[in-house]
Image 1: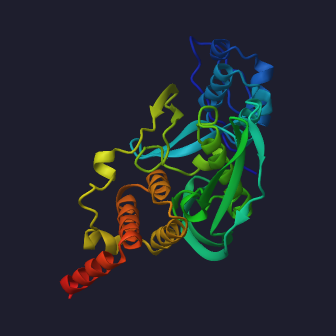
Image 2: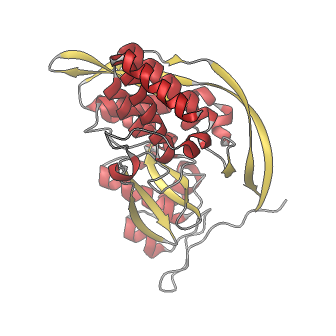
Length: 342
């Protein structure tokens, strides 16, 4: 059976490399303060799926900066697609267990409720993935919950306060390669992975000052550029043997939001909105109408949609909000729009 050739790093100053799954020069290990035996454990047991020695090295530096015990694997090396580089790069993100531990150490975490799952859907996904150095097309059928709601409690001035987040499977699952196919983990554990993401979102809402980072479970399979990844954190990235940081900036309010006086949707753009996005927006509008929580719904849309999808979501929320506050005016507007379309 043919064996896969390990990724290697060029020797530094002619030094002999430490031979293991991801060989590295002793001088490189000295720079990050790791002995050869520990390095072998890291690349073969702690981070067995890491593809580059630089990715593991970055995890070491991340844990040292945060005062974390890397042997407990508080972080994960996560491959993400870079639109700028046109290929995958390795990034480092904390796991859900680390985020939960951080919240618990504040002394203000006051428990959590059992998750509430939405209705189950079954769908066939198609796409292409890389196997044995070549791209293969395929399809897979997955049954998954449409959404999950998770609540975390925090003590605020002595009172036990709930922080609830709803996370949708369709906008959260990790994709494998190009196309829409979920990766192996999301195929095997569609409910478990979504639950981890919902728990992370609720912990961030309850403890923004301590658990503000996104988790490895949320970032796997995403695109590193900020226009495709809905994060306001930073991703530690590996590229060509160099360590650097790419800031995942906040959405630009001038380009991604709608002016207060102009909430209309371009017909061509509306026609391009996928049915799945329409369904998510419809459910968001329905929940907001029932609770009267329009401001919170807009914040949710800003955090979970980008580009044309964000424009569409905000426009639909504004229309529903106007209808709820002034039914007569809303009916008149709809009549005018229908007459114009005719």
